[in-house]
Image 1 (cartoon, rainbow, N blue to C red):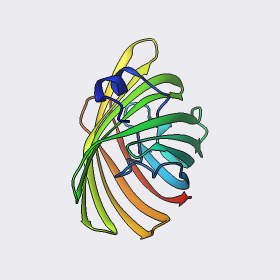
Image 2: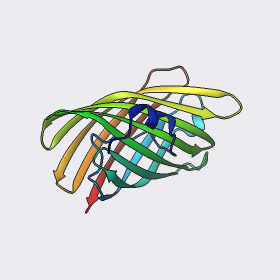
Image 3: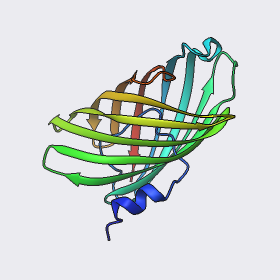
Image 4: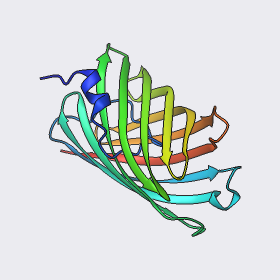
Length: 188
């Protein structure tokens, strides 16, 4: 059973769409676990710059839908740590291309809503290139949307291991650049 795309947009699960966009949903009833490092270059709040480490895990609900939990710990201690859960829906695929949407909420200083649209091209079975548009909406004293273009390269080291590098290019006034490097392991 496929969940309609519009329904998915109206059902904001807690999400972490800000960073780490995987090319495809997890296999049904499979778990994932991973870790990585993020560097923020926040030009609007200089104290927010710096490294953080994160862990994440997920579960494949069905072929085209999965959920993921993420927690980030910031080394500089300038602000609170990040926690969120994302829901990814794969709404179209061909032999070498995937189109998916990621949506939800996160808690990082304030609550926020995330929405990302991702296109992935599999150059080889083991090599993926992804690009898309990411929107983060923070619910602080004012609502401030931030837009980024996530661009990533992923390498499938095996059927169970995925290593990735991602850069989030800021495209709105209040956004900042984000670099992420990490690995994800599928546990069946």
